[in-house]
Image (cartoon, rainbow, N blue to C red):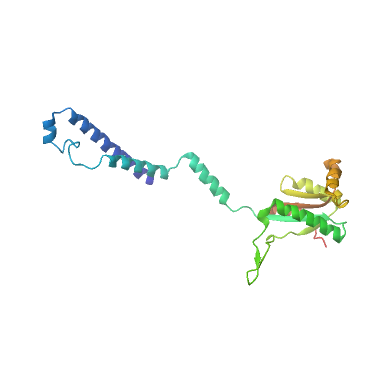
Length: 221
């Protein structure tokens, strides 16, 4: 409706402009005396409104139509923004450790994976915790991180089948054989992917998908 009104207004203004131009043209060919005797017929001699007003009205009508139906590129940008603002699918974060690890080594493996997950997914960190007097504590993950257990073979299979669906952070067994990170890098570099075994695997992805991937695995205790 806004576009129709704006279009009609633009047509009216254009007709007024054309009529004004034709009157000026016709009047210019007549003697000055005739023009002086008929000021209403020849608006160039009459005290009519500013001719720039018609141009102003035409521009206003065009802007109104432009606002009602923006160009395709602008509409595409607006649609993309709407998609970006839409709420994302709920996420889930889990860590699965080798059930054969001692509690100390299992805790270390889970902590290493959790640290990297936090670095890769900063949006998972919640707002700071505040005491009554305003003292702040660093924000923690609001969705929680269950720590599950699996066999070494299950860990390798879980990592492989999770790669197409989630972000995967794995901790190869070589990580607990040395405290030298350069040596850790070198040890992994000597092996092919099929030869690697893992102490822990962390997953972040759509809640339902992650739930299916780790379904049947028990909590590490």
